[in-house]
Length: 347
Image 1 (cartoon, rainbow, N blue to C red):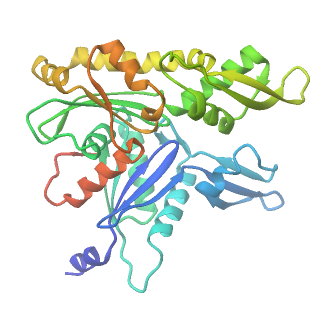
Image 2 (tube, rainbow, N blue to C red):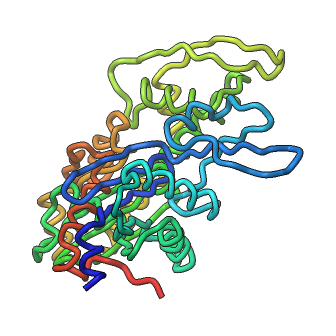
Image 3 (cartoon, rainbow, N blue to C red):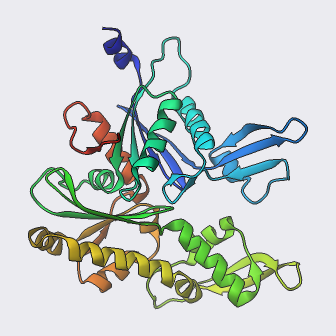
């Protein structure tokens, strides 16, 4: 009796705990939070006590700009937890933001997305973090399944649907039919690798050092995955490694394309392997309907064109690719009592 009452009063949540951003969907309210997965920690030197200074957007603004006593860190790496304690604290803060203390507030049920390539240990760490952050019950859903549901693909039907979710830390490739994942693969390449490749390219070719935030801005402004007719340029500021002095310089979209070649090739390779491993009947469905791109990486200019050229299949970018995974998890949350097969088990 009491459990059914607490279920009635609790605000159930679906969480896309991403390497770059954390999104939260609340039952019957939609997406209520979209913030960077960044935590700023203050280290009190005399007592050696650590305290959370800021989370989310406020903490992201501090990345690369903090004094010695403050550390801005990203507790998620490659789609999995790199720092258990900080992730737990970050989740607590985010849940508190969307579910402020009320007179009678029960612990919510939570659905969390996990990369399909994550190990049982990594999945258990994510589940334990959510339970420690105050969840009553935690269900895990694989990212390709959540992305496919969010993109509006017919996952319940006996037809093959292919989804490529390019996130901050991982790229998930999944083939789905009859409410289950027929094939899934996860490569640890995503938006972060794109930024890293840009930083390394500029260091190697210009002798300049730029930060993660600048690299992300370059990627969003002039980054592309396919050679275009128009060459775009952007002025960038960084530190000259030889002189040790800040300098401004100009980079072109062709140079950024060259910088991104290696991580893009890894994504293309993962997609080709998935197509090779797909059963022929489902392969025929995919050849007809094509594949859908979701995640922040789907926003990289012409990435759909690159995959279409490499595979010869139709490629579409989902509507609002950034929120596909959390919207799919939210739909799974709404039907949680009716469908159990789409969730993944953790011992």
